Length: 201
Image 1 (cartoon, helix red, strand yellow):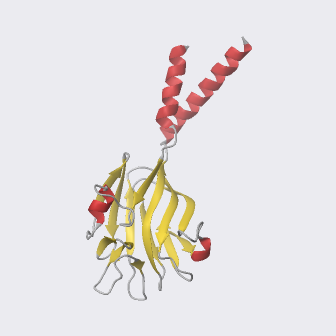
Image 2 (cartoon, one colour):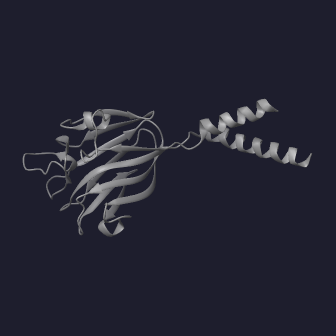
Image 3 (cartoon, rainbow, N blue to C red):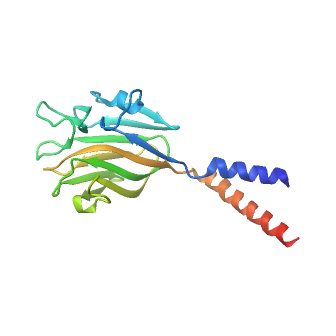
């Protein structure tokens, strides 16, 4: 019976939902040795960054990714504001991201977001528009959400024409695979059965 309990506990530890993983894109809070900070500046991509076992691949749709003390953006031409993702009627900048595991995006951290501007997160051929009034916290330009992204699918961080927003970063949690979720459920059931059985003795 002790062996069963041990196996159940191991199953719970292995398969529980992952901790939050934050990809800090902005130079505002970057520290020396930060793998994201070190690799994204002045790079068109693709750039592969691994944090806590999760790999994300970053690519600029045009120009290069750029980080300054003012924020993160895309530098698509000489007149581009380098610390913002911008869009005009003739050009639109975007950051493309892919993950090697299923994830849930739980938070998008923005900056230099003004009333009247619109940020757009595109995945599964669907626009997910974020207006100023949609922000969870307008002071810090934080947007809390719950978006499931399949492994290998592309997420596009961009803006609507006339907008220019800095993307400070985003936070995700790894979603357990179906097999892992089944082990988790079995472990919970086994522990529940064990508790009920011995409580009746």
